[in-house]
Image 1 (tube, chains in turn orange, brown, green, red):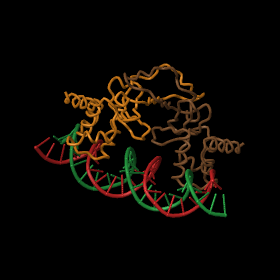
Image 2 (cartoon, chains in turn brown, green, cyan, purple):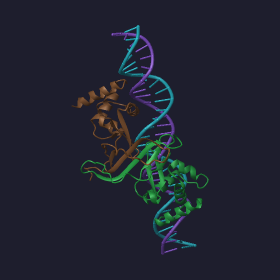
Image 3 (cartoon, rainbow over the protein chains, first blue to last red):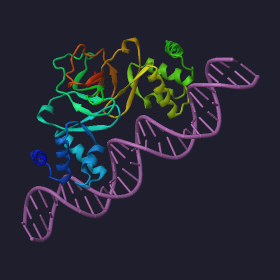
Image 4 (spheres, rainbow over the protein chains, first blue to last red):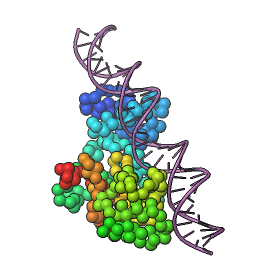
Length: 140
Length: 140
DNA sequence: AAAATAATGCAACAGTGTTGCAAACAGTAT
DNA sequence: ATACTGTTTGCAACACTGTTGCATTATTTT
């Protein structure tokens, strides 16, 4: 089962026409396995033992994966990027939930669609970033 | 007219029971005068000439004002806090718009209300952070 | 005016993320 | 297999935003 993520990761990287490096495969596999969006540090912790990787390389791999739309970044009010793999569900825009106590971030299903966001005249919408904050089931 | 903001600022600070310092008055007046949420650096720039103030003090004043709910903070994907005065309109939760070209941030009217945000069972909603990204009228 | 309390300035720090450049590597052609 | 080419990596140093501790200064109270 754990190997499935690895294989999926390899497939995704191959499909996006990039070089197959162990950093990319491992990191994408970790993000695929994870249910929630995790930080750079948490990824580093997951890599311990598996693969030695420089901090900078990790950043660059994450940037590369995000550019290829294989993962996406979420910012939250602790000013830290969190990363999550783009499963099919997540290719469309969606909201995130962040627990104000344990800082866990999960992806919510989708955006309230079809709304007119009442932008001023002349403004052009590109993207919506919605984070719902509160307590997760474990922290309630 | 510019003095109005000063007077309003003084009133707000007095009303919230804090000490009246020139830093607080000036900074709040600047934020009241500003139509959009601005960064720590932009506030510093506004202060030039008016008042000499340490970087750290500016941070602390902003933190104090936010705790007293006289202003509010917005985070965005450049990982920088932006601050905006709480006019009456903004006491309730509201959305923000950020221009992806000039980084200008403005407040939108209000949140799409009465929605069930489809949180997982056991999750508890506290606050909603919604940023609409796109191009502002000048950058289109 | 003096005392009590809170805010400020300074220096040093912490954390995340970035840049430049030489060395190592993956993919491809020979 | 081997050599080539351009990417990717590791390292060191940096940039930026924001924080902490403590002595000094300012505001408010008595």
